[in-house]
Amino acid sequence: MANVAVLGAGSWGTALSIVLADNGHDVRLWSHRKEQAETINRTRKNEKYLQGILPEQITAFHDLKEAVTGVAAIIVVVPTKAIREVSQNLNNMLAEKPTIIHASKGIEPDTLKRVSEMISEELTTYDYEEIVVLSGPSHAEEVALRHPTTVTVSAVNMDNAKIAQDLFNSDTFRVYTSSDILGIELGGALKNIIALGAGISDGLGYGDNAKAALMTRGLAEIARLGTSLGANPLSFLGLPGVGDLIVTCTSVHSRNWRAGNLLGKGNKLDDVLEQMGMVVEGVRTVKAAYQFAKEQQVEMPITSGIYQILFEEKTPKAVVDELMSRDKRDEMDDISILLNERYTQ
Ligand SMILES: NC(=O)C1=CN([C@@H]2O[C@H](COP(=O)(O)OP(=O)(O)OC[C@H]3O[C@@H](n4cnc5c(N)ncnc54)[C@H](OP(=O)(O)O)[C@@H]3O)[C@@H](O)[C@H]2O)C=CC1
Ligand SMILES: O=C(CO)COP(=O)(O)O
Image (cartoon, rainbow, N blue to C red; front, side):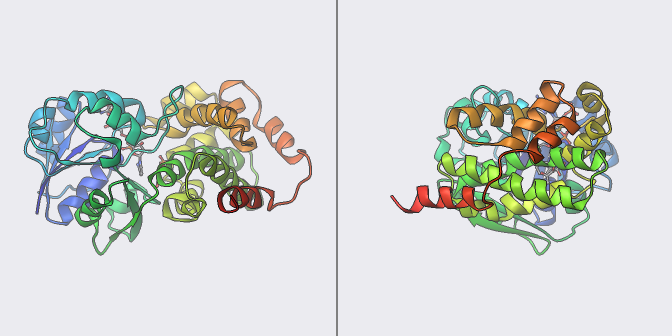
């Protein structure tokens, strides 16, 4: 059993700490708020972020250096806007070389970097190839209840991915490996945009037909962008692709779905984000995907529509009307183009 540090004491950091503690590891859950760390240690609860009593093997820390000293692995689970700051702060704190695993889902606007790229840019003693991602359909609330959950871990260096698999795998939390880190990170990040769309659709009062259409055509555009960047198209049919798309678009646990739902009911973005009180990663990622699509010259009509709702004050109804009146086409156009590009050269 190992000493493991989990950086980020929100919903997902706390749930992953429970998985690790159940597997017998000693978990140091780091919070950037001193009062939160003290409350967790005193009450064994992290009530703002997750219901339930935390296992004894979890100890909260506020001092980052203390939290990471001597650990075998570090799990980075802060919102993507905090990834660079937290990674940079780890420089000069690590005498050994613990395995770095991240479980955050997003793409950085402007740089268009994935989380593994941001970590390796800031944490100077690590190469991109060494960083592991953990992603898949996994609401923190259900993981904390020990309901069956499946995720995928991936890294260029598959030995590191297997270390992550061994740390987390259990009879309630089944962990697969994949060698396609690009596809795994893109699937997890981009599905949040479609989940915002599914929430908007539900908020407008549309039914299951509309949501199924958004999910299916949303997956097509995620795969189109991902494949243009070099990801394996089959990754988007896996757990961090269609699996995470299903769980996020159809669940009231999803913060992205909930935020979209409030937008669909006519609320303003700033008010919605204030009400949520937790990270809604899709809002930042839609900016990145919108830029990425332009740069790659890839058609992403749903993503563009959601971007326009969030940042250009277009009404959801106007976006739906535009999506429904686009030029007629063959459903399999996208898939045949991307498979041809990949396999017939
Ligand atoms: N919740 C889930 O079910 C899942 C979430 N994820 C991903 O995990 C990541 C984290 O999400 P989640 O835990 O749910 O988010 P939450 O909003 O629940 O919690 C975020 C945590 O990060 C802390 N934080 C914010 N900024 C910083 C910073 N600069 N330095 C250190 N800590 C900071 C917050 O502190 P404060 O209290 O001060 O705001 C809070 O404790 C996201 O990328 C999300 O997409 C992935 C799978 C499942
Ligand atoms: O990624 C998630 C589940 O796999 C959680 O999604 P939300 O961030 O929308 O809550």
